[in-house]
Amino acid sequence: MGTDPLMNLHNHTQYSDGWHTPEEVVQRAWQGGLRQVAITDHLMTSKVPRPLTSDGFERYRRNLLALKEMYSGRMQVLAGVEIDSNPERCDLEALPFDQINRLDLVLFEYVQDRQHGGASIKELAPIFERIKVPIGLCHWDVDRIFEDNRPEEVAELLASHGLFVEVSTSDFYRRDGKPFFVLGERFFRQFGGKVRLSIGTDMHRRLDEVVNIRSGQEFVRRLALQDMMLY
Ligand SMILES: [Zn+2]
Image (spheres, helix red, strand yellow):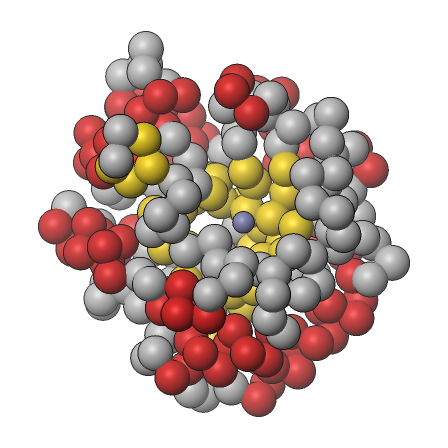
């Protein structure tokens, strides 16, 4: 923390809808000079045809653990999952919490996003309570979702649930040609001292996307939020 953020905490593999193996993703991260890389496959959502399930979970976790050991001392390999907060696509009550709590982090997508049917932070609070590892809100269009709220209130709300927010550098998460984090700058400015951050690219297909973090790094630096990074 406090140094230049060199992380990508959002990558998919063949364990859900990604094209590559965890080995390939992690190797690309190492070649690209990242300090932290997380694998975060989709867990139990009907949004993707073959999500990770509780049956495949241990194999997934052990695979990532082996990579963590292989890169130990060189780069931090982190094990996570991405959870769909739309209750029609993901049975949130049925999530394997014991297994989830053996990971390093969890990402939630579409939180409080009506356009995507995502449950609100308030509705998710009992689910968040059962998760003991860091919880992040990924590719989050905070500027649209909280357009009627003051950024200070949103920062307080996130802080009260201990949630971190992803700076998503994926080309997919843009509106009016601008990344969500740029549109949400007035919110991110209020996160200082309160809400932790990550950088993620939501890599699925192109291995070069593993290291496509520069715009996020520059944003964090410009807002002097290096101390707020999760790692
Ligand atoms: Zn994702």
